[in-house]
Image (cartoon, rainbow, N blue to C red; front, side, top):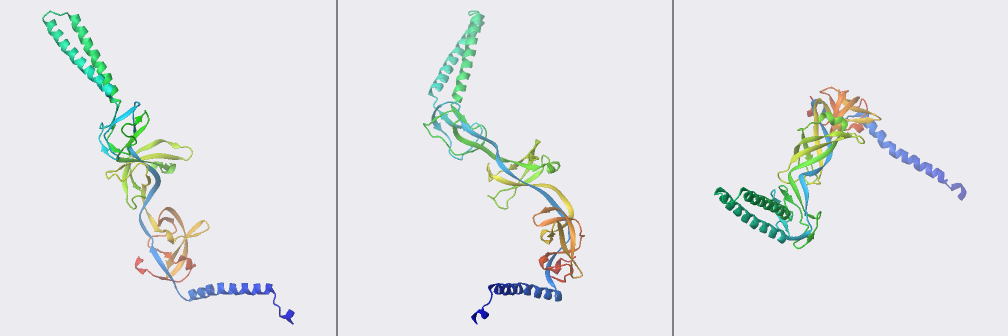
Length: 353
């Protein structure tokens, strides 16, 4: 008796599968039946001819207009420091002195000797005018003065090598030395950057080369300042393409009066290539099927699937080259619930032409 009531596990599995299939398919069939008897709500957009800006996007790195790491020319200890971290300095401003007592003493000695030699030269000139001294003595003293002047120039040059001055106006970085420290040629003292203008180097593909020119406007964006555009212009274009990437390097200059941009920043560059006057639809209206693109066009309150040929794209919009005409309505929301010939109810009728 118990053997006759035993149910096969295979039979149970089959019954469960049939129940699941009935559960999954019944709502879809019900919805399809409801749609056949009613209208599918959709949102539409008007196909219109409008300006369509073609923008070339690239990534670039910010560079200061002028940038240098300040170092010493001689091995010596630091005697005086005349700057603080982040100071704004002018061209030629004295920043640091190395120990220079010997060089200063040599300059002073030569200045005294030169002054005495010039005094003697003037005295001999007076004697020559009265025929008391010879022309030869005058020439010898004049040569002595010139020799001392040359020696003084050399001594001043040696003294200046023990000073560090700003080669151009800009902003200093963080100080890397202290008074009394021994520094050698090549040791970093600080950095100096001219931030009034930022250079941005970026690369564009070969097919965009004909669309760029010196003086062309660009816009740069940084994650540090969301939504803020920094405008500039192309200052130079590379003379050759990279044979590996088939791209060319471009440099843009961006005015930086507020010093917001800093060297090393990653910047997104938008370069306007051209402005087309063309048919444009929202990108979400497209229905991709395999390698083709379709849209649903509203005709007599019914959806008609139409194949289109697309062109350029930008976020949210796409150029339509063929398949639509101005004034038509295309479905932008609700496309997944539509099929060819479905009746529709437009939720935003105000967009009608």
